[in-house]
Image (cartoon, rainbow, N blue to C red; front, side, top):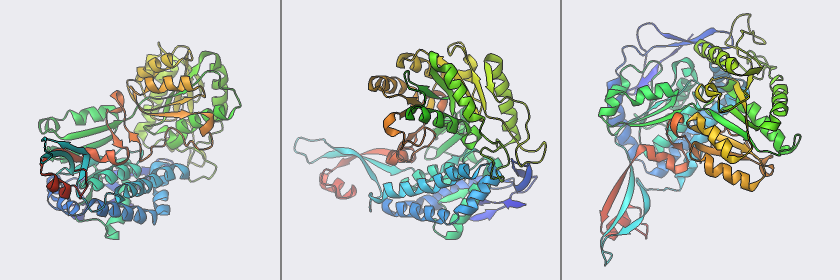
Length: 522
């Protein structure tokens, strides 16, 4: 049994009291334990502010970018070990584990590249200089500087590696130290990542800390220069955002919550065409990858009314090929959901959908996974439910089943109808649309952008290159309005904004030119 210590105030510390037990969800075998009882979270926050922040701010932006590159390389050197841990603690297939682990090192590497060109500056300009006098002797310019506090990164159970990597990349490049709080149930991978980075000796003192277990009173010590970046359920996000200490002290809060993402098929897409096959492939992958436990997973599939029967049959045929079981078995293509609670929630959610619609495949009944002990493991079958009316199927637009579960709904084929129906989900991280008609696609983009953080367009020209709507890219926005949290992460260098202060600087053009790195337009 591995004991997961927390890395706080420059030391690895073990909590007291009864520990939480981490299990292999394929077999329910205990694999690790953790506790944070008795740890001094106030001291960890002070350490980040007083040691980590100054250490990072001594570095130029280019040096911070080099730090991210070193972190990416250090984690890449332990890739196989991290993949094994992700499979055991997360119930991931190897492919799903790669999606998470490689996403972490890849995002760190991407931000190393983004930051490399920033050179020896310690602040970033935001926009051009603004003349403030007729003779040009007085100008103003906006500067982006790191906030003077700590970024607390609270991550969901489904992406213990990527969740850490994508938030830490932006915060560290901006110049803010981080305290990472992964979900306890799958904290093994994050714990090992921080241990690898610490052992490599590449982290400035106090720049990265880790809470391996319950956060205690950590959030009560945050203030106006701090950031709380959270990924998880909308309910938990609302609770965190509404905490009295968070509100009173104006702590910056960013929420990236689960959402009811959509896939929309245009009218006239021929069965058997490359575009139709892309649609089917994407929907099946985005329903079953990570056992459907992705914030970007497809939950609602909108199909022209005259194509519902055909698409339903084709998706059922593809989903029936999925082999559910212990991911240690090479024949398995989808593992279990991650925890016993997730299993209960999936079963209850499937029953709610099936009661309102027509169950085409799957269901809530217990199953044994291939290669797993009888009666053990948190297994759910790929499940597909069909509804005759999208507007009256309120449960589809209100309840997300965080597992391998999707619903098929009819629409009239127009961008207007599709947009109205997608918007019933009250805000999503991503929506995908498949068609070749430029006018139809334009109508989709102009209407979908209001309610979706990202729009993935599948057309005949991208069938060889497109990687699916569920893949979050470092250079593009990750976040969405309404139910999705109204947050914004990644998006290239704009991802640093969460961890920076924007301040207007006024003065002599020559002085500003020096401060802003000798730029002639200052």
